[in-house]
Amino acid sequence: MTSIQDLFSHNRAWAAEMERTRPGFFSGLTKQQKPKFMWIGCSDSRVPANQITGLEPGEVFVHRNVANVVVHSDLNALSAIQFAVEMLKVEHIMVVGHYGCGGVLAALNGTRVGLADNWIRHIQDVRDRHRVILDNMPPDKRADALVDLNVIEQVVNVCVSTVMVDAWAKNQNVTIHGWAFGVHDGLLQDLKMNVSNAEAIEDAYRNAVQAVIAARH
Ligand SMILES: [Zn+2]
Image (cartoon, rainbow, N blue to C red; front, side, top):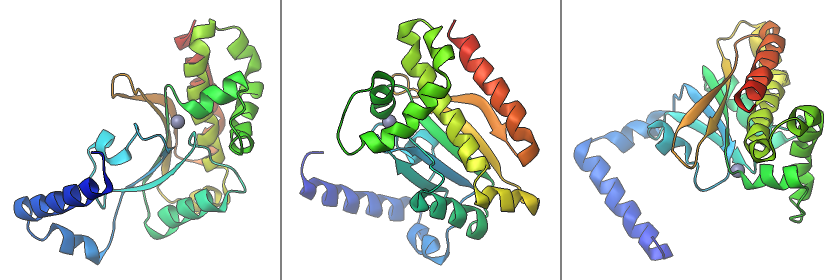
């Protein structure tokens, strides 16, 4: 896939093949979207939400940014989360990091990359919060550990957002999950950071951070 023209011809072939094997697929999609899942992932081209999970158009609501960060004042992410929870009534939100993440590596090493430094500063906050854990780890394990820790922290940020505070106060059934994707093997790891109500945040957080430490010693 090298030229823009290739993208259009691929698209036409894909649409024709879908319509041939499943007549009415697209007209069905025009009626509504009813995804059960929301994916908050990295913009990295190697981590495509639908392909990794085998989900089709209409099955997962996606928000991606550099290093899958959920910032309390980011109206883009918060609007997407609000729409997913309040309108679409998704039942699961997955925050998905990935090993080898350029944003996380830049944060770990303090590499300057430009405007994005200000965005990556949020991951450096995660690094600094867990400085002792990272320092006590073999150097070659720190990058993967920070990927996991970043996911765990961003799950907390979703959990304490006004959207989730309000949804759980109404006993809405939504679980927030923390996952990490292996670009090297194509597999998703469950970071055991699964939260279904506000009371469960603290225990889940403590256990998930402990699991990161245990996995890398
Ligand atoms: Zn990334």
